[in-house]
Image (tube, rainbow, N blue to C red; front, top):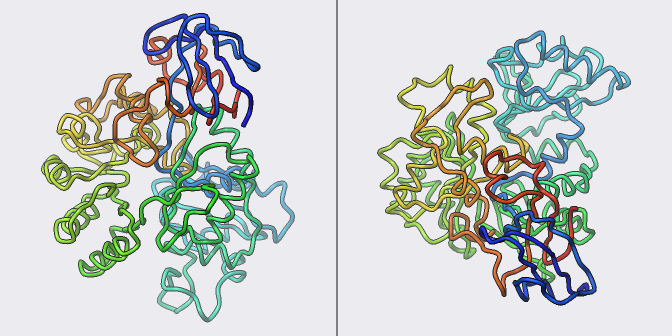
Length: 463
């Protein structure tokens, strides 16, 4: 444990000119003109707030994205082709290229033949922006497919793989045999955003995946507190390199499990002594989830992930069951223009609700779902405040929240999203975010540029 630290001249909960002393990972004292300490940091009048928590992220996917061609925002097939071509320019024939962020509104439902035209001399795989689907060209399929392919490998009428692979990330990763992507760059990036803790929500996390993340945490490559979801059993390591979170149940609207299977999955999580987090993007997925919790019984810590579509009629049921909703306001900003083209205006309020859930008393927390949206929590706050798409269109004005409320969505305990926001107070764990400006100024224009320093357990991870 490092020597005590004093952070000078900070604003805390609107009160300026305060010093904060940190010792043994906790806040030991708050006051004006505290005695000197072996380590000191000048806050220069900026606000000191609890560090931010991302309650739903995919770390390995985010790391892999750094070496990918990003297709988000591509306007049409020509732009998709141009971005793929640029990515291939530096790769030798036969090499792999990974692309992400594709949606069928860009160039339709791609098959291997479409991808062969995009990359005739390379192995190409493209991930759908939902993360549910991979699309591979013929050369890539030849590298991974065989006689024992899992059900998610879609086949055409001729019995050959179509190039579309649904929800088989673990299988595909094993077949690729690629080295895991470096985690230090995303660890540094998350720290620079003021993030002190994350929950990795990947259903595919198993003992080996957890060990990889734990190793990165111990090495300082992931300088934040880590909670892991999983689809199966998972054990917390003795050194606490990560905490074990809920059991993840992943639903796909086009292939929903039967009701009894849902009950079995919930029962298995109960046997492991863990809560349940269910992926609910569509109204159909939500309806199945709520019915299953009604029958199996909901317990503290059970969660709805995303809440992409929550009809008004479901809010009371969510509240009665005591479920927490972990949502992603940034999708309104990043995908709002597409939503506006696909959803009738009267249903805009149903998308990634915030204000109505809070008004009803439902525990609500925010997250990024990165890499499927930006990991920047300040962008998520801005979207929760104004509900504007990238082009400026407002989707669901009644779901807007105040700037202070938007910030609070990122301040819950990692183990209790949607609970009371953490505070900068004597005795609290020193997981902190120091801003360059007073809080009122930061909330008037939420952006990551306001972050001056981030501390986890009193140790600087950024700044």
